[in-house]
Length: 474
Image (cartoon, rainbow, N blue to C red; front, side, top):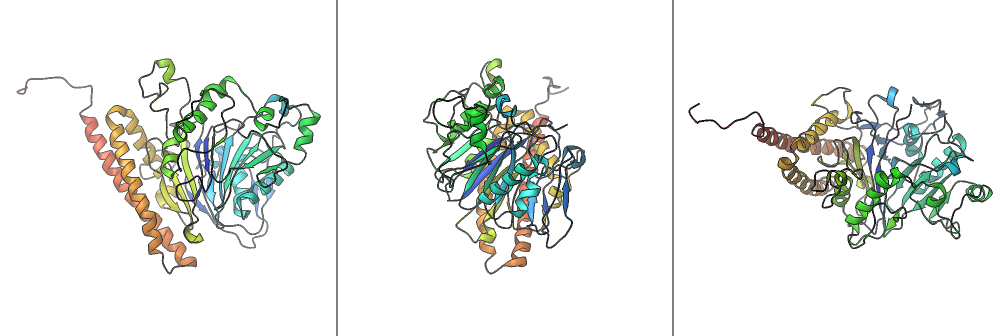
């Protein structure tokens, strides 16, 4: 049985970011708080015949090309029961992919193009696409051709980027999909609902779509609008779940990036794409993905009524299995332009560690995760840190905020230090160097995290309720 994820996505064009990079980001949320993941490198393939993939969740299988690029991935540890779910990565051509944002089509459209039970689903999607593409646009094209051939068993949305373009692709029925390029000076955000709105079929530079989608909509009388072709209105839903689970997340992220705009958190027509009031930094994305409606009555840790505090689903959750920002820079050599900012413990309380993706292995604490608690594993370690902060939130949240701020200061300098130290290196020597430097960054993060956890454990001793005022002589 497939357990649908419930993610939140943010996409940022190169002119909307503070440093000219493209960024795609997503919280990988599941319905289970405990689904251990690992961070690994899927090796390149060169002329290897007979390569295949078979899903553990349905009967999908396909042949793979003989050649494949090396890619990082964040799969499930228990893949035989949970599926592969490589989730996110950046290939050797500096093309990023994050999949998927679970998306739900309506019954009108699914009646005429139902989901395909044994089609290509999220569990295998990155594996059959990312190692074989040369650009973000090429990623949309390849995935679209595979959906046409095999069909889709679920509604899934996929993020692609390279140094120039950012694309969002929505697969909503068994065979139909549509993709939109995010304008360079804009950002986009969504959470588990059809997001793309007005479509211009005369603009193939900014829209791509499944063959026959216009005829499909016309033949079955699926467009509810008097004018225009609104993908969200045609294929999407607006249910009680959308109002309390989905649209509020778009509302709050836009409140952060466009505080000057007043909107209703339950508005079904909240825009998918906006121009931010200021340029967006990766720290802005981190805060948004870890947010829980701070400074509103809807914050579960805030001062609203009990009803208000539980009215809307927070963005950062305890069941966020990993969160990532895939950044492609344009102001450094291509061999060092791709950085995967990976948060393995939950984006509200734990850091986004920068990994140059031109690497040949990950730190052992990331790539050898146990199914049961092991404090030496990054996934379990940072989950533990998050639990400790939340256990005494009023007392520990400022300690945690200071820790995250200091790490972000360190990471900013660290990235530039690594780039400067790579002068004169190329090829395998550069890959080995970046691999070693990534692991030094991991070690520094662990050292700072140990100090924080030690401080919180020490402070927690004094917070016990098993205490009593006594005479000093007793």
